[in-house]
Image (cartoon, rainbow, N blue to C red; front, side, top):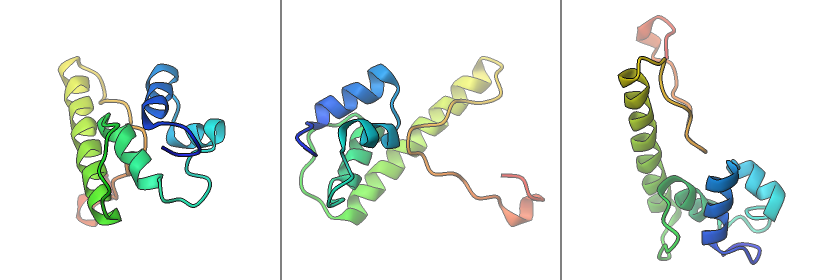
Length: 106
């Protein structure tokens, strides 16, 4: 719960209205106060889980990054299977840095 917004409501808004993490913050005020809910909201948005035990920030970050990577990989697989140029970006997914040995390609 963040700013009296249950995680279920934040997830619903994100999915039904296509709101990004930043747009959810603007609309509901979530993650704009003390900031303790930020990693939890990231896990909610990346995994769809709305019941999350108390965890340390490192563990929450690892869960979110793993889910974002799976979602990103699945989107890329769907894009190549349909002949597209790749999948869409996942909300809050980290950008990949270019490999210096790849000639500037990401």
